[in-house]
Image (cartoon, rainbow, N blue to C red):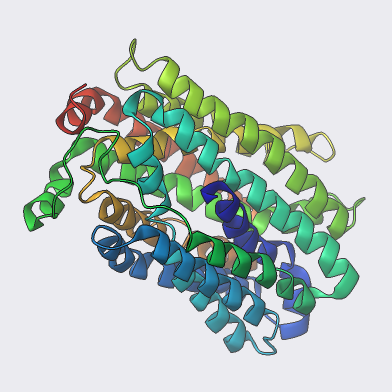
Length: 396
């Protein structure tokens, strides 16, 4: 159920990226303005996530999921009604409100049901919805946008979302801390303050921020960059091809990252950090090779860049789950969401859009590659602390 919802979550996010060019032409928007559409969504998402995380630590999480899915589905449909750039910005803000009620909650439900020993694979399976949902968003945007126009494309997202919201109301709430053998209790202010001294949590959040900066830039601007370089293909064809690459690379990498983290956990206590760090560092030159290789050969480097960028998804979220107590886990995920988006994809689409307006998208993607290198180095620094921080929560 959570996997299906997460698929539509990322479909709703990336449909807009597939339709950047027709929306720009219709609303007479610059590259920098289109970057602000992603920032508007993320601003409401990240600012409100701690509020919903606080509520999720105290009330029914499935009820919050239902509210969130309904809100973002209706707001996505409203995007199709926008006839001015201001209206477009406002609808994306409300999509963020809905997703703020879902993002911090879903991984805590899974963490209560699956123990530390195989939690990496479980969360990796859940987060496979990121590449698949994102790719489906690109494909849907390219196909439906060409067939019915960008306005009506957003209307297609409403019915399935409302059905999933209704379905969520009938789901059973799991016992908090069940798989950690940690007794459920009311969270204290001291536990929240301890997050700032939790070395694994802090370093994971910093590495996550760099990764999110890179992912936000790629997600928003990659179709347009490819369209500029690969003149032989139509925008629809490029959206479909890039969507297919994101699905394949994302599926393989997300599963591989979760499996590798769990597989080597006994041999290397910091395995989740190591998988994240080495994946980002190896992905760094792949982005550079993509920028300076002509198409169609550059598609190979696009695939590898996406693969190594997605390799960290399962392990990075597993670190968050493993080093935070169940009583504050939803809030810990929410605070992480606030930080990684504030310094990540809330600013990267605008930054890269502004760089593209002044220089070129190629220059903007060079900044993306540097962010990947920095994130990889930060994640490697966290490997030495993970075992100790995990044992504080799950001694077994």
